[in-house]
Length: 514
Image (cartoon, rainbow, N blue to C red; front, side, top):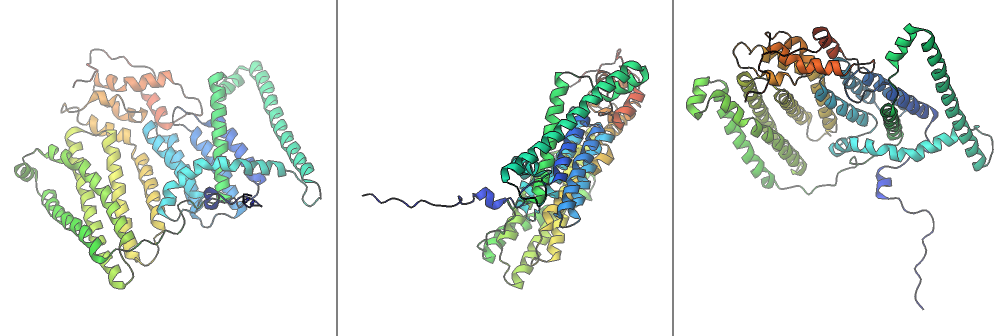
């Protein structure tokens, strides 16, 4: 007779996902549910998906307000840092109110999403900070049972003994009654609004400016944006109440290398860096004639030739330093001081590499003009330089202490970099410097046509012919896409004062000439 395997009784063992992200809170509270509903309605009514506009910060206020209430009521905010990340997200979304450059606002919106992810989690280690946005993307799916339990308990009498089925039925009835009352309110607004609009022409103009034209595309956009915003609000509140530990556990103790095993490769890199820095100091403090006689290139060619390589070197150096700090032994004071004496000068030399890359890009821009890509990579290189400064500060703080703040500080530095770009107004900055080059015949008017409405005040300074060519695309976009209140934007408003209607390009050769 074959032996029967014993039958395992009781609940199944938790999965890896459940162990890394346990559900500590049984059900969503009423403020969370109401906040998600308000955020969904405000976002559906306010967000213009196709452009930056005032609707983005309006929706951000609703979503982040609901999140702040959830953090405060549940006491899950361990420090004011959570609220700082919320404020940073709102500041990034507010860029849509001031700047019309779509590429800049996309970067700000994506970074604002990352700020929300950092606000609702613990994220002490680098892997946790890197996976925080992906955790927030998964959070709405994990929040569905949590929200369903909260809906079932809404309005349930506190200590009244009742069967589970009756309590759930009562909670569902209360939720249905709440949804029905909202539906009745919306229907009444539609009926009375239509009657008032038909009775008064001035009121009809106000309603027309507020309410978009109703068609299938508008309804689909409302549903899509509302569901996405409500899911994001629920997911963020779920993460605040049920923090994830994905990537945040204690690292496995790595087998330390012997001194010679890490010192030889890292020391060789340091020697190479010192040699490069010596050459760069001669170039930086030399003149153009010295560079051309030494390397046989023009000054602009020399600058262009090495920027991207130096950018890659900077990124690789961060990886080398991270691996060395992870693998090098730190058991004794001598080990720790040796690590400082090697990684400190390597970080300092890396700052010189960053400075050399920025100098090369500046020389190249002076020779060939500014573009969005050149301005952005310069800002990115500045962020890398700030990152090396943070690494130096972490080393000065002591290798024995924990540096869990470093990853979040790097993320905060990136937020500051993007806000600095927004203050710079990159499209207008590019236009201003390139317009000044027109007299020398060294400005690409065709490229200036591709800039956003932010550049219109500077493009208006161009001579006749070139002005119409550079402003033609902006004028056509403004005439084709009228802004309602959701898409109102300061940059496009100023551009409309300059080109209130499409411009005509006459005999100017408005085409790419290379």
